[in-house]
Each structure stands twice: as C-alpha cells, then as structure tokens.
Length: 423
Image (cartoon, rainbow, N blue to C red; front, side, top):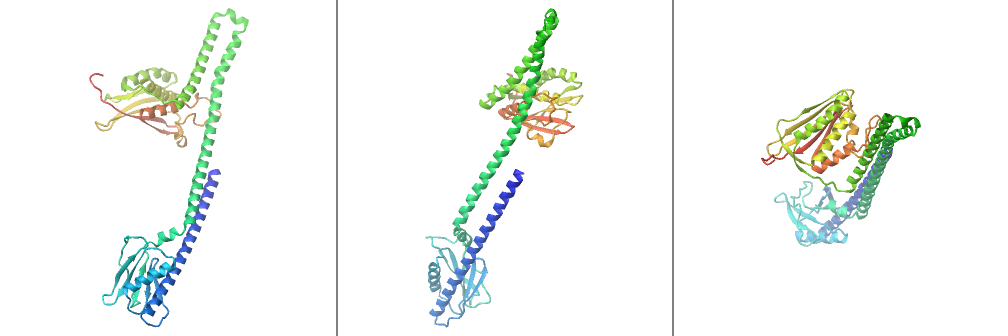
C-alpha cells in the first residue's frame, strides 16, 4: 500500500509539473511569435517608407517554428534591413541570435545576409541555406536558430521549481527506501530473536532438567547416571558456547576489517579431508557424499581455515535441508584459457530447494527461509552470511542455482595460480 500510494503520488506530481511547464513554454512561445510578428511588421513598414511606397498591410508567413518570411513588394537594401532588424528587436527586448536572408529574383535563391548575435565574436552554430517562398517576389527571411534555448532561459522560475520538485522526489524516494529497509531489518531482527530464543531455550531446558535430576538424593548412589548427566550438561553447555560464539564472531566481523592469512593451496586434498569428516554424517542421515574432482591439479590463494569453514558451512546446510535420503556432491571444474583459468567449486544437493524470491536474500545476515513456527532446522541465519563475507574478502564470486523440490547448487568461482616445483 505504501509503495502503491507513493508511486501514484509521485507520478501525479510529475505529470502535473510537466503539464504546467509545457503550458508555460507554449505561452512563452506564443508571446515570442507575437513579438516577432510586430517587430517584422514594423521593419516592413519602415522599408516601404524608405522606398517611398504606400504602406499596405504587411504579409508575414511563418514557415516553421523558427523561420519567418516578410513580403515587402520592393527591392531591399541589405545594410538598411540589418539596421532596421537590430533596432526593432532591441526595442522589444529580443536580445538573441538570428540570421536573415533576402530573396534574389535573378538567381531565384535566398541570398545569405548575415548572422547577428548580441555576443561578441559569435559564430553561427548551424548555418543553413534559408528556404525560399514561391508566393512572394520581394521578401526577406529571418531565422532564429536558438529559439528553444532562448525561451527556456525565459523560464527561470519554472526551472527552479522543477529542480526543487526533483529534490523533493529524491528525498521522498530515499525516505521511502529507508522506511522499507527499516521494515525489513525489523522483520529480520524479529526472526533472529525468535530463532535465538528457540536455539537457547532447548539447551537451557535440558541443563535445568538434568540439574534437577542431580539434586535427587536417589541419583547420588548411581555413578553411571551421574556421569551420563554430567556429560549431558557439558555437551549442552558447549552447544550454548558455540551458538554465542557465532553471534559474537558475526559482530566482530562487522566491526573489524577481516584479515586473511592467505597461502597457496592445492584444493583436492583439502576437499578430500573435509569430505571424510562429513561422509559419516551423510551416511547416518541415510544418504551419501560423493566427490567429482577435476583431474587437473591446480592451486589457489586462500586462507585455509576460512576456506574449510566455508565448505563446511555449505555441506552442513546441505545436510540440514536434505530430503530423507540426502545426496551431496562436491564438484570441481577448471574452466578458461591457460593464462586465465578459473576453478569452479560446487556443492550440489537434492534437498528441499529455495524459492526464487528468497534466493537474493539467502546471503543476508540473520535471514532464514520462512517456515512459519516450525524450527526443525537449527541456526541463526549466520552461516551463509559468513560464507558471503569470506568469498568477497578473497575476491571470489559465489552463485546459487535452486528450484523447490529439486535441490540447490552453490558455486564458488576462484582464480587459479601456477604450482611451482618448490610447492
């Protein structure tokens, strides 16, 4: 509703302003034509007096928006015409550039007269052959090449008001953008608080129940139960610490510049080690984890610790959002010419997929695909934000291809480097 009303209001204001500016311009143009007609009629009448002819109604024809021809029924002296035009235009406040020409009966052409400007040393910017008019025999033509810019210069107040309107629209648009951004941040904050409350509530409840059991005098004689309950408390405490550390780490990455400890790495053994750790998790979930690595061995510049965390986060998400029988594939491809090879690292799964409207937000901090009040998947929405930050810090690119019900593929594109004999 806000966007619709805002767009409607802005569109209405713009249309209204354009309408009134056009009306004002048309009025200025009409006044300009009337003034030109009066000035040219005065010139024609003065030429008739100089030639000692009876002054008749002067015929003025406008052949285009900026070109006028004036019938004088007698020979025209160029110097006299130029003086009379200057005097007539100056008298009526028309200080603008123009060019005039006189029709020559012997050649049946418009003889170019002169280009007049109020500016010193002005040169005609568009000197053209003035068209002739067959209905007259003795006439001259006057063209105003800068008519549009001249009229625009007479509309200072309208230009000023239009600029103010543009500033108001930009400010209004920025305000609307800020409101929508704040609304989105508020929704993200609400979802984060809901997720965090749920994630922290479970281990706290488990610790509380276990602590109550430990206070039961009957448990004191059961050594195995005591050890088991102690392990439960220890594990849940470690889980709490992990969750809190994720939030604190995210806050630190926002405040501080991320510093990478990059080195030359061969990706194949690193991926094989990671796959070994996640293969058991995949089997326990009733699925599998496969490696399809490129036969060509290349190296990359990367921070090994952060790279392991990035791949681990992507594999962890693939398991979280997997179908009952997850199938995860780690794929590497070397693409490009010899000097500009790129290594494509893809994590492919057959999970639930992501709708298109959520794919652009999937790397935003705290964002999680809406699932209503269902919290069967743990997390704060920080994993993919961390992945994005690390990928950007390395100067890599990451993309997502996903369809609901058909799984997802996260692809990271990395520049390669040559492997030397010392490596």
